[in-house]
Length: 161
Length: 134
Image (cartoon, rainbow over all chains, first blue to last red; front, side):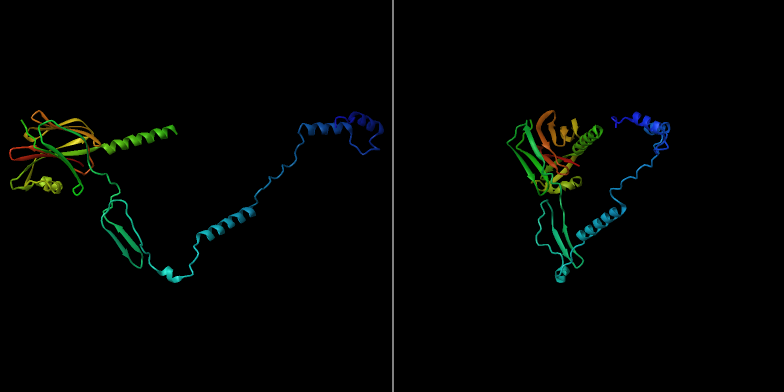
């Protein structure tokens, strides 16, 4: 564009006259050109935003997600109705923590497994870390009694002066 | 973020302190072969005491110690003195009789599980010390 001799073309057109050539007046042309270059006449309508995901596409995607989720969550009905009607059954049970009696109550409505006296935190017995008997004695017995949850430290044959 | 970490650390320290806190009951028991049964104040440890070969268990004295203790000294009946220091997990216990050290021991006490220190002689039987963290 820079190499085109606009001035020369303009002079030629001016000499030739505007009657022969259907062009605008040069002064008006340059005014319009300057105004356009300075942005004064840039009043074109802004382009509409591009919609990457139209509303109909979003609705279709939501519908597809709902249908897929429902298909995954709804269990497939068993073909054997007799098996479905059977009660829940405890075939094996193991309670790792300390506990008492285990009762299992099976009824039509359901099965109840009740663990009595379950102790979730077994703190263990007391511990004698160290001891020193200063007075005369014959023996020392330390006994952890699980039945009474107690610890006994017994000094035998102690003599007090 | 740092504030949250500090708060969590404080909560852990506080929880650890609470875990080691407790009240320890101290009971001085006289065990003899005389008929008399078990004192009502010892009913919670009757099963333990009945395993000892005595006929009578009388409660001579009782007190409580707040744990953790810092050289808590308890003067009890018949000239016995108990000194406790430390936490429930690492409690130093010293038993004295008329100024004479009889026993020094360090123990870990579990909540609700009594520790029996026994065998201290009397004319009629034995003195039994019962420690229990409530």
